[in-house]
Image (tube, rainbow, N blue to C red; front, side, top):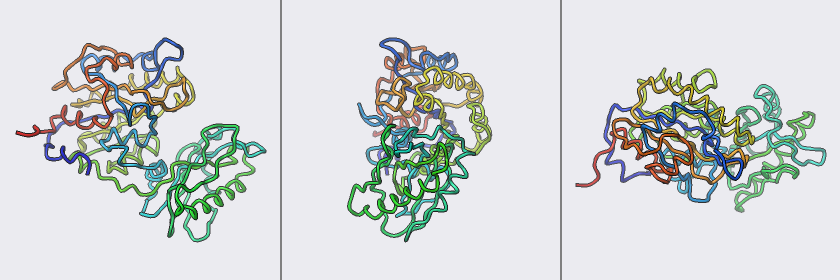
Amino acid sequence: MPWDYLRPLLKPNQTKIVLLVMDGLGGIPMGPVGPTELEYAHTPNMDTLAADGTLGQTIPIAPGITPGSGPAHLALFGYDPLVYTVGRGALAAAGVGLDLRPGDVVARGNFATLDAEGKIVDRRAGRISTEEAAPLVERLAQITLPGVEVTVRPVREYRFVIRLRGEGLSPELEDTDPQQTGVPPKPVIPRRPEAQRTAELLNLWIQRAREVLADHPRANGVLLRGFATDPNLPKFPEMFQLRAAAIAVYPMYKGIARLVGMDVIEFEGERPEDEFAAAARVWDQYDFFYIHIKKTDSKGEDGDFFGKAQVIETVDRALPKLMELKPDVVIITGDHSTPAKWRSHSWHPVPFLIWAPASVRPDSQYRFGETACAQGGLGTFPALQTMPLALAHAGRLKKFGA
């Protein structure tokens, strides 16, 4: 169980903690100098919290290591990502409510556009809509393999999840997504000899998938990533004695919340204010609220600097609705950085703001942005320390030692 030293220190309280995660929040200037997306955005409400709170910046995994969303979230939730590994497939499966058992193998899939030579033109098939993807997933669901049960479920837009269930399967497999265009998808390659049969089965499935998708102009291929099985994680409510709610739009982030034992709150809409309204609806039932904003990351991956800044501004405009609930601790951060300049995740430190009027020691910073966070009172620290900080500011930790 992680945080064994912390468990004897936990104490009950009536305080409420909000962890607001703007996915891929961190950025870098588009030129040699200039603002980041967060610094460019007009964020008067976050700036007020920054002036009254304390700033810092987190390292999701380790200096220089670019994190995936799964391990970066695990760190924020208090799980050492170098100890507790969760494949993206497990996150995707949990996000759509697909159960996992020991021995299952799951992967997240992307529909992709391939040219006549089988080379990748678009890794996301033009970001086809969920509605357009649904009948394609139905085609994939009809593919059978010898000796195993195959289940395929839609996730969102161009994404789907595949699960193999049977004897002797192994998730020790290499991704088929080469992370670039102009080259063919990679074959499924086993990392260990015991995964050879699983690799052969999945390569057969991919071949048949291309056959049943051949007539689609954009989604005529598939890419598989994040092979995984049931991670059997310790449960967040037991670790920290918190009733925890997760509010997210995208299935993957619902998935990681489910895997750690949070209750996923269902709601209508996709705007920040819809998510904050969902928190208000269940406010009295929970102590801890994980709220996830996805489109900061999406815009960063698209290379859309101004679009990412606009997403941050929409969160800021909605923030007063969240603050009306009178939380005791509010943390605003990202899971990792996704600079629009890079169009991808990066290893850069992530801006971090903690606001807790009963306990915070304000620093000299008054604006929420990377430069201010680098100079903030919290300094640069591992994202793994987020939960102890949250619990301390919420008055949920006793003294250590005599």
